[in-house]
Length: 144
Image (tube, rainbow, N blue to C red; front, side, top):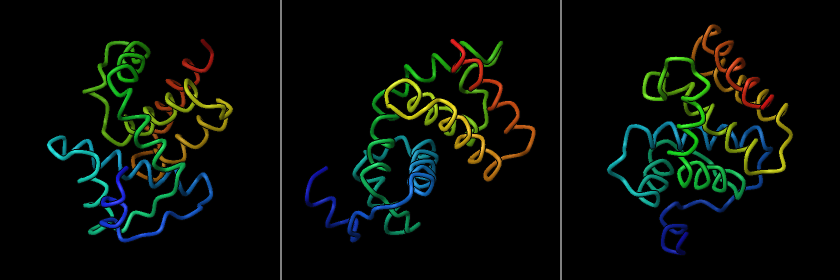
C-alpha cells in the first residue's frame, strides 16, 4: 500500500486483537462486495473516512489475501454448498466463509479458530440459521 494511501486513511495502523482485526477485515470485504468499481486503495480510504474501520497489519493481510484469491475461494465454497453457487449465499455468510477458507488454506491459524471466528461473525451480521449453515460448510472444508 502506498504512503499516500496510508496518509489518506488518516489513521496509524493499530495493533488489535485478532478477533477485532478479523471483524474489520469482514467489514472491509463486505463493503467491497457492494463496490466492485472501487480499487482497493479507494475502498480503504472510503471505509476509513466514512465508516471509521480500524485496520492493522493482520486486517490488511486478510483483506488483500481474500481479494487476491476471491475467485478460487468462491469455487471452493461453491463446491461444498451442494447446489448453491457463491452468488446465492448471503453476502455476510459469503464474506465470513471467504475469510475462514483463506485462513485455513493460506495461514498458520488453526482451522478450529478460523471456523469459530467465522461463525461468530455470521451470528453478529446474519441469522442463527445462517451461522449453522456456515459452520457446516466450514466443518466440511476443514475435514478435507
